[in-house]
Image (tube, helix red, strand yellow):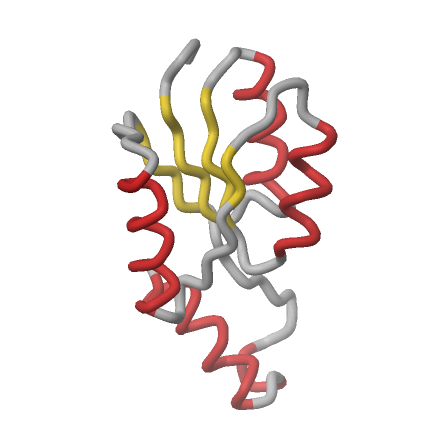
Length: 112
């Protein structure tokens, strides 16, 4: 993975965060994205290398376009895009409020 340009969407927590830590150790060049800028900045500070941090919301096409523009403006040729953005709930769907169900569908299905 050395010198590969890898965009991790959903990098602020869970598997995305763990993957960013491992790929940083392998000397990959990362673009770290998620909705939470604070979480992304905290992760970037913990990594050995400094990476490009771009907050992105998969449910907002303008946010995605803005992220792609930033990557393009820096002349980064992506080798991989790894989308791990997701919302998880252990509750039964019938027990969730409609807003939570809509958010799960927006991020996990439509956003992807």
